[in-house]
Amino acid sequence: MKTSLILIALTAGSLAGGAAEPSSAARPNIIFILSDDLAQGDLGCYGQQLIQTPNLDRMASEGTRFTQAYCGTTVCAPSRTSLLTGLHMGHSPVRANREIGAEGQMPLPAGTFTVAQLLKSAGYATACVGKWGMGMFDTTGSPLKLGFDHFFGYNCQRHAHSYFPKYLYTDDQRFDLPGNDGNTKIEGKGAIYAQDLIADETLKWVRAQKDKPFFLFHSITLPHAAFQINDQGGYQDKPWTEQEKNYAAMVTRLDSDVGRILALLKELKLDEKTLVMLAGDNGSSFPPNSPLGKRFNQSSNGMRGFKRALYEGGLRNAGLARWPGVVPAGRVSDEPWAFWDFLPTCAELSGAQIPANFKPDGFSLVALLKGGAAPQREYFYWELHEGTPLQALRWGDWKAVRNGPSKPIEIYDLKTDAAESKNLAAARPELVAKAESLMTSARVDDPNWPLSDRKPAPTKVGAVNKKPLK
Image (tube, rainbow, N blue to C red):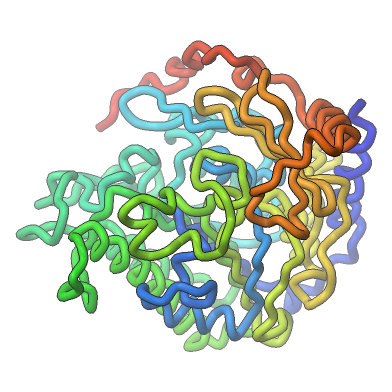
């Protein structure tokens, strides 16, 4: 039943493990900027007209913009897990957001292999700056136990809902932010905007690594709700609601912080030695008929669905890649790829060996990044376990969606109907049968993630987080 999966995984592994190791001088630095809830429709290069994103638009013009870049799934923790582990949701150890204790999420289990471990084995310095959300420091999911030399920011994604938090972490040490109450909406007296510290730490760390290969996972909370900003900038006098002004300013703030990173790479003469990729961790975070959806017309890309659904509007994210002299400038690619391709890509770029006992689901994107075609694969697969379990599958231009284990499979032709407006299931029963077969073979059963219409009992993982917070 899993023969096709094994073949896919072996192919991905051979792309990494069988490649000749690049010379030290040829190995690029790798920066992956993951923005929380950034949608295609937020950026000028994807058609946004009201929110200013000059740096990201320039990044697109100096590199490649992808129209079919897929997230791991459509909420934070599992999407990030897919990016770091090279596993799709049929094999991922985390397939939903699960909160535990006073602070923290369900941790990545012992034995998890990450892209940070892969690159560290090849001599890369590694850091995660921003938000983690995959295990507190006293659990198996700590970033410091999974290949990262340095961590700075929020560990818990629930804690990251405040942009004026009472504290942050440097490595596993908590430090307080005097003057913050965790709830400030706009700049308060003496309040510290967490992204100011995160952005500065990012530049400080990159500058310190300028003479060695490095991997930076820059996991920015912007523009996730709550919609808080310390400076509305040019949006302050717009005839909009405070929420609309804040959201626009948060996206522009994200843009300016990315611009600072790109400027630093140029200053350090690392431009042509560094691959920078940027993506959102899911598609649009709010419906098109909501106030923010109406104001900023995020549905202008014409796709159906948003966060916590498995239609294209929730799964396709903003995706950019820049590496001067290697990634073609000004290219717009309709070739599809997904988060679980990142680990095999890093293996090929670095010459690192993927362990023989680990088989990622993804494929190296090096040829695609250099201007070629995307790797051929049998399918893409997604699950989501927030309430009723959802499944989705894409093979070729066919897309299948099942909104619950007892729900019928829907079939769409993405080549002619990217909006997924015409369900072809009744007319194409053979495609329904194929989708059902692939949905079965693509996944491994896990007691934490049953395919059941009944809501599962809370996962009993609290015992791994016994230590009180200091």
